[in-house]
Image (cartoon, rainbow, N blue to C red; front, side, top):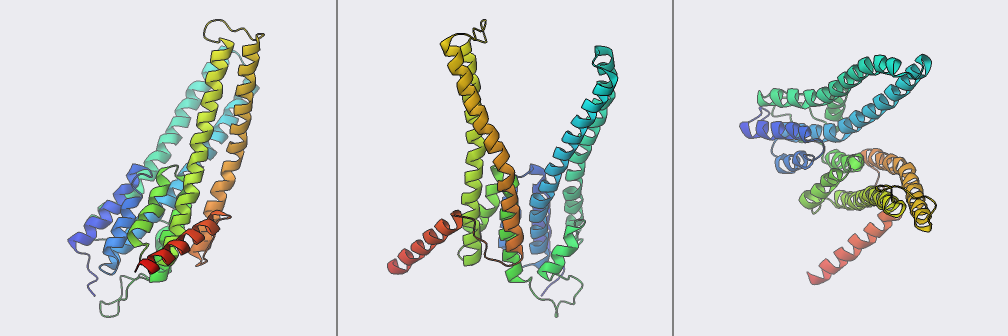
Length: 312
């Protein structure tokens, strides 16, 4: 086995890493690279799987960091304003430096997220064995990837762990709204015929993320409908009349829609936690089933396989 990265190996590695710059939309490219290069090049396969992990796990850490920063900064701002009083002069004195500090941190984290895949792409273009901090060495050990071995002693990556990693990343990518479905969908299309385990995990993940996405957009549409109803029925655009029957209906519609949206918003973190837990279980080699969805998908795949066998 040739362990020296060829031009094709390096191209796939560079593309896989640079796809991280698309912020979730490029998550299908590392899976394509892995499916094309597995059993051709350990180097390209490992770099593609590593880039896949960064797009999902790295994006998750990035989003959570942003949320923590925004919440902490908002609490800090309210505390400072509360201690200094609410005059416009005090507010201007606080808001100026606070906004500079906030946007510096915000864009700093944004640049930091881009820095690693760019460095990875440059290293891979030069044929170097790039490793992401924290994740890289652990993934190499998990996949049994050791480029220092002599070519005659080198073996392919651990096939079972490859499949588990791709399936797990599909679960982890639930935090990437809409585009996260590209990971399990691509794995299902490209490698579903070769692995029943990956096919089942990918199909149920697509369904699970589709339901999650519908909840997102459904809640947004419901809030917009309630808000527009409030404006139309209360006449907020041309002198509101809150005592009319139509106004009361508008307020009730908006209140009910807002209540439903709040319930959905409180439920969504649990959905993400379940997705992360599913990814962890699959990474350990478990054949994880989502409640209800897993059973329905299992029956669908079983029935489809039975029909295909009869037709054959």
